[in-house]
Length: 279
Image 1: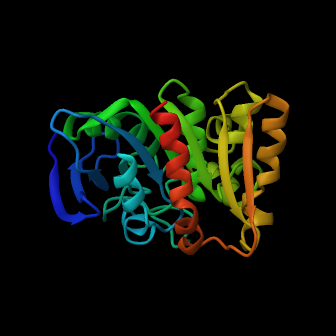
Image 2: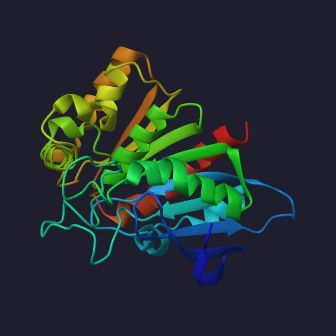
């Protein structure tokens, strides 16, 4: 695969890089970031995937997430993809919650989105193969997390691929997009009006349909302005209780939806993943 290094910095005893490559899945160039701690030659490190939320790129968590010190101490590679294809040839929408920056980690089937909005295939297949080829990654030890729309992506990708990910967590995830305005708009636009096609992209629906993971960790701020309309963590709690999936849902008093919230609990999540990746 053709991989271009856009930038590279030393940080916390490791290397923070930003990379670009031509994607077959999206038909566009895609940009992503990877932090790799220093390690012995030949050593392969476990991987944590981080999926970002609406309006974000790879850069938001890279600049605000405060993950590198913990990743260096724990020996974790940290991969942060973009949230959608981008470019003049790519369909877009003037609203922030549809189009570029709002791919919802689906493979779109509807015009005008279908030619490029294939973020499920990109994350699950193409980028995973590239990470395995280009970095010192132990693909037998993977974890996934994400924020908001990216929390939705992390939960659904893990539920669809239980043999790939040893652990999954999320920050303020959209847990049931089929039941909230953000998700209803995006899923209808990308997949059409047949709601049965939405279930593969809805964590609560996937659990109802039999998908399982060993356990879940979710942090949610109780001062999050999106909590009651778009996030609905109680729906995930109810689904996990019915399915027997252990869920640690931590309602964090006073925290909102921002990276001030995410960065506060990032190291907790990374330690939680490391315990499961190194067991």
